Length: 392
Length: 99
Image 1 (tube, rainbow over the protein chains, first blue to last red):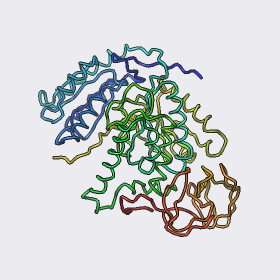
Image 2 (image 1 turned 90 degrees about the horizontal axis):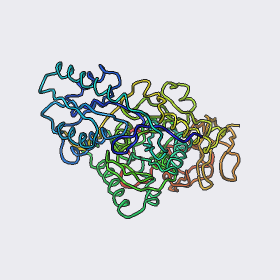
Image 3 (image 1 turned 45 degrees about the vertical axis):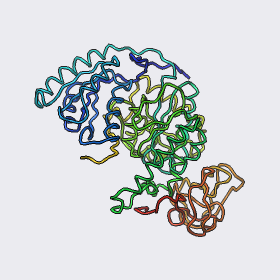
């Protein structure tokens, strides 16, 4: 297998496998203008979102951190921030932090110019940023440049039998070659936490993970709207999961955590927090809500996402290729335009998990080298920041 | 013969790869000494079948780990799902839509 891959080496040494100019709204109010600028200049990605103002405390910190770290993802070449002017998130502060890192960052405020002139100036700036980014060259990098976010959504019986263990094989191989894996979805680790605690290095990691689990369970229990639909953590089994044959949260979680393979856990991170360079598995706090979970891992530094889906889903990300994997052959037939990798042969016994893992790793390397995923081809630029507080 | 996968020798349930009807005999693939079982319920594809008798209140095992507690007496060959298995987590009450 060809193990050398080519990526874009950034100023800070991080390696990207895409070379996007990101148009980033600082707040919901500037999202539409940001979208119009991005649509006008091919080569731009946009991260529309609903946050950025009327937020407090840790909820605000989380939004700020996620926005900054999304821009710092090595798949982003440069950024144009579109601010409104009166929002809680400071577009100037974000621009300054990004500029200091050496990554080109530009800023426009709608309250300086109005919509039309902001779009016009935005197009001018975006055009120059795309031109400058277009001369970047891919260079040979080792497999240790891979930071893989692992996600599952629309799970059914096949996820735990085939797709998740296939991703686990790739996680092991990437780690053996010096790479990093991010496993998120705290709600979908409840019921399997004893197995994760065993893999942690020290008490500090265990303490952080315990805090994370308890916070999620308690917030679910204390939700004042709980009586409306009686949703709480044990019911993090969707009607589709139940139709597909999954009965309890423990069952879903045990099947989900296999995505992290046997990789030792070397860090426990808050949502959207940057992971370290050290090879290994990082656990990140996030909801099981797919787009928010992927958004958090991308802010954490994932440059490729492996997304298993028994029942199929179209979602992607604005800056990181999302490879969609299923073990359910019926889903491959129904949703061929959404699925990148079929591992149903593991279930029929026509392929071993090891064989399936090697094939998926090959796919990962091809995508790293520039092959587009189905979600990229269809323009699925889903981005949503996990909101953990009330809006004022 | 239709098949079900048993993921570990200790598991009390296997996962069916096709829809089966009451009375059908299916092959158990994977680990363990049990090779065949006759099913006592019609069971949808991807759902679980008990590979041995499970008592009321007994822990149900899949992936060599507990996935919940039996809320009824379950016989080998019966469908195991929301009607006879619930989460063993005690920090919350179950509720909401589960079907």
